[in-house]
Image (cartoon, rainbow, N blue to C red; front, side, top):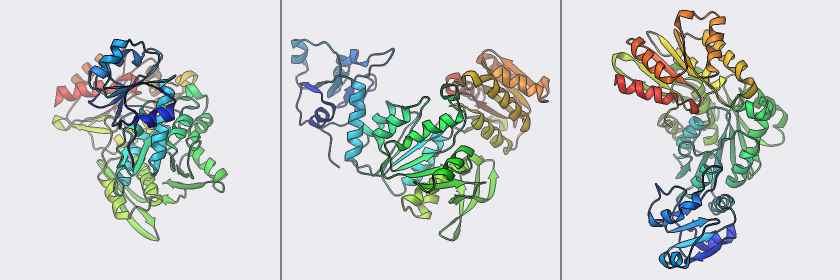
Length: 466
């Protein structure tokens, strides 16, 4: 795989070279002058409330080899000072980023696996990446870099030696995954499920499905991999199975990759699948039925990429989760914290509570906050969570957030003992309560949308009880 040069940037972006050598080889790309490294190309991203182009001098002074910028002001003295650097001016740096990432993907003629879904994108991506990495040198999405800026930078900063991409695609409006798909041009497209995340923006689960299906818009001879247990995906599969290559996975619906003889444990699970007319035992190192589904998805991708079953098994058994997603923290006196506070939806709360039920505990404490971007559905969805709490073995319910009060109200209405329901308007009160109330062998689940920052509560409790 050849390197990208300044000439390549000029060709694919239509940019104007203000100063620099067009034969210069580019290493990595950055949008942050605070973390920029020696030799990077800085791209000045202009957003609604921030203009990275204003910091072009800081980028060069901090070690950047060159810039891709728009609408900057420079003098002859600036040109003289930075004559050993590269300055490229474009009409729109965001569009330049998209074009450059698309160009980089094209010259990396390697498999691209794209993952989207209402919940479980990141954990599924981690599992799939671990399996694919058993055969290929991979580049995968790190953290939450799954949007219109993070994903293109992931592609741009992939080393030229990579042999496969595993990319996560997030969205909260129509058109966003369309853009990402057009840039990444995936060969394997995964949809983990269709739930209620962002329903306030999109209006219905059916519209969420339409938005997720944009993953196909830029796909190259794609294979679809879908969770056949999800009602809307199953319906879509039945309607489209004769028109596109679809590989299904599931537990309850008959699927191409289907788990049987499932045993759920506190710290993992195991099950049997049939591959090539032979039963294979699979062990997953993280608890919860939803991680069984995630691992089935990874197996489906492994099959499509002709990865041997032993390598698939090794990839599943050795994968590690991205932080704040079903992170189990063990404290003194046998207390366990489940930090699953990166995001939230009705579906993921249900899965997290089900997982907590499989953990042996003195008491099970659920600390739940708002699900964001629910719009006109906010009251309905939070009340549904209150019902789900009552269906699980929860001993104490702690809520905080503008809409989380409906969780508490609904739990009370559905028979949860009022004496064990607590509602607070600020997180500090939750910390104070837990410090007073936690007992040996308790298990505490933290679950809310990322913007609620419930992972801060988990960290404070961890620090106090380590």
